[in-house]
Image (cartoon, rainbow, N blue to C red; front, side):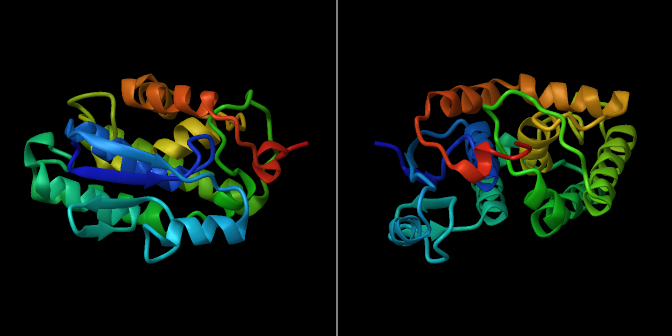
Length: 222
């Protein structure tokens, strides 16, 4: 029996679930996955509160412990599985990785609002507001800075895959790619590297098998 149980929302739409899920996948630990469809606010909140004090997903249960925030889940897994190397080894580099992860965790509200995550729809071109354009520019700057300063050891922000990549993966696979955001060569290569991850492909295939649909996510740009 798996020691971990991860409660997530629809794979097509739940960006926060994807972040924690990627970190857990990267550890190689056995776990049970429970999808709670994000369909109706009342029903959804009631169902999720059975497993998450905040009424939000993701939520990780490990024995009697419940951890209910994406970044907290990632940090917990990094401590439990040091060999997974979910953070960079060097302390200074690790501090930068945590900073860019926290920036994604707490920011980019305009981008989240206009470009809701949908990993299974055909790509469309979606005009961006000035505020969203500013947030897109900031993400691209983060990616370029990390790749140029810390990314020599592999195709990800800090070379090898880390929690920072888990935090930005929904932007790469479910926002920038979905809504036709123009990217420079470095950012485009990074998006392609994220989308090529076996774990990301596994998530997207799972999303395509889902039958639930939420109009607010499906009708963006229509």
